[in-house]
Amino acid sequence: MITQIMPLAAFTFMNQTPMELFVHGGPIMWPILLVSFVMITVVCERILFIIRENGTREPEVVEKMLENAEAGDIDGAVQIGKKSKDFIARILVYAFSHKEHSISNAFMRGSNQELNRFGQGMATLDTVITAAPLLGLLGTVTGMMKTFAALGSSDISSSTGAITGGVGEALIATMCGLAIAICGLLPFNYLNARADEAKHEVADAATALELIAKKTEGSAAN
Image 1 (tube, rainbow, N blue to C red):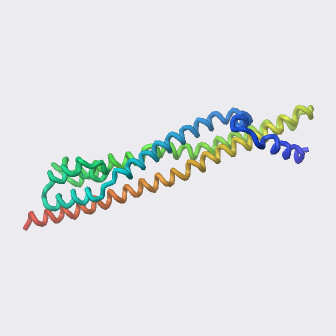
Image 2: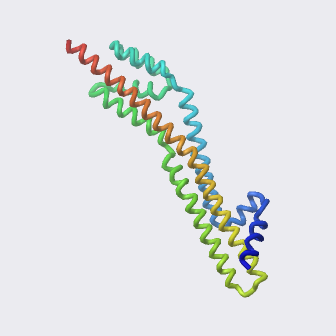
Image 3: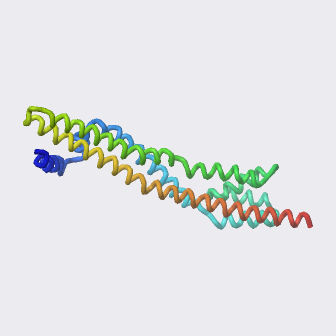
């Protein structure tokens, strides 16, 4: 009997509109829908952020600031950096403007502020990727519970539709949960890679600034 019902279930849920699939997915589709909206919102905001940051990169400005700092013209380096929207330039401006106690500590504080901007939303996206397949699994469990309950019914005519609906609910919820997780995983990995790239860029600037500081200290000692 089950082998006859399964092809019927596949045929029943084939070529349906998204709204029909949503309805047949059961109540669990509502939290899955909410999770998908959260994922889309975070991904769109983060992608726009990365595009905006990539468009404001000015490595030549950073090099010019470091050259001025090496020559001892800190004020000139700050003035150059204030005209740029490059996040490395902003870090250097913060470091040069708060160098009273330690320029390295000021650079670290400025870099933490900028790198936090690259990490915003990542925890939310990670939660969505984890929660979506679990919600799909929950839909699978509730759908199969309906199926087994219908199998125990004595009314064959009414139980056939219930069995089909239970199997369909299980499959649709699982499919949607996995689809959301897969769609979220790709931008999540890209955003993580871009955050790591930003950390490397900050580390390069920190190394250059440290070399300049040592050179300046050596010149002062002589």
